[in-house]
Length: 627
Image (tube, rainbow, N blue to C red; front, side, top):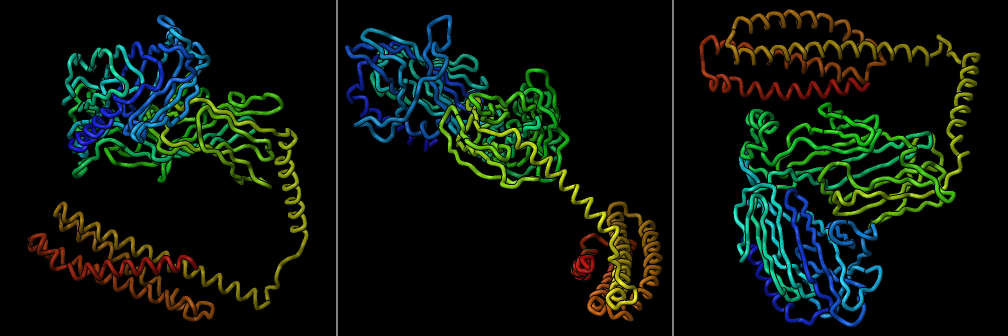
């Protein structure tokens, strides 16, 4: 909170100096209506402006200004002309051209954006302008760390006055909060809190660069799903399919979780209560955690899968109709603040829905952003994989991105497939607009891969015919053939020994399991019965080993492997003896009704040796298994 107070003090001093600076033009903002939406992790500020030209010269641009603490979090900015009341839509149907400008005699603490008007605004004329600004990482958890049972509280900082280089005649501000509960907020004249909406103003005759700081400390238990990196690969196949693969590296960007994670309370409170009562009871454990995400896929998506590094995840639901397909995915564990997860979503789409032709070129028309709702993406990389042989490649994106090309090799490729790579930082759902990738492709190139398969199978069949009619056998009396036969016998014998030792290790595990059952149930007789069956098994196994070892000792081909085999057998016997001794000691202690601490002291030194021997035996088994 002290950091916020210092920040506000600095900005108040800075804008106090700016308020005495000259006006940039003769424009006047006759009316400003601002609405700040804080219902999710993404802050959306919608501003309606009535702009009037009080000067004599036409105006061709309008300046928007943002303080430094907001500009660095600005992800999306658009401005449209409004035809007026009752219509509510931009007359041009598209946003005005916007670019960053640096006016003279302005401090670095401000960032200016210039909006170019389609035609000059003449003397005495006015227009209505709708501006949408979207910010990410603008909400700061306070406190920064919470336990599972705590709710999530956030701090938001802004100005009650519309920060502008122009004079504002009338201005009002409304802040939409996710919950009716508000810890604290800056109280000004005319401030009113009604339910989950906080209103400031109206304010009159606001001078240029007026800055009236406000802080709102409020509850927000919405999940903060942030993708540190998202890589979307869109692969085009002219055989009728578009394959989309999305790799997510996701974390919870809200208040970090502190303390130990209790799985049992999570199951009782989070799994059950959050499913039915989290909206009515936000105080239950893990109120700000999330374990479900919804991805809105394009219509007619098929072959949908969802997996992570371990494998496929079956806890997901898919449903859809002719207009949309929704995939509800559930990670393997609930995500609390600061926790991370990584997963992959893949699906196929009909090619005819996204690939078109124009002026002798084909072009892909696809959405840019992520299909997951209210996801903030720090770095988004979109890769469009074109068919091999594509040329004259270009991309059209409705906002600035980094572009370059790569080459990807896949099955049956000769020169590789061209890949158009688009990268953008700080991506929000508003960026989920369509982009186009144009290229030329000769349809005859589609025959390349089928012909390669045909000729490949043809030469394979010819090779098989030659092989079947050629005598490539080696004489059974030759030294190389005899050596090969002897080595195969050695390998078979070693494999038999490997299997026998594996049975012994299984018996060891059974013996250890009987001791664990003894500590849990106290049934000494069952433990002794297990020991008896294991003794019988190990004695039979010992008899089976002797002829196999004798064979290896007599075979010259086994000279290099014999020492390792003998070492394995010796260490297994040593391990067996120590396990039997440990078993006897533990059973005797239970019969004498000694405490657990006394039992651990008696077997401590033996247990260390058992652990060491087991590791050595496993290493030798791995070595022999590679032969």
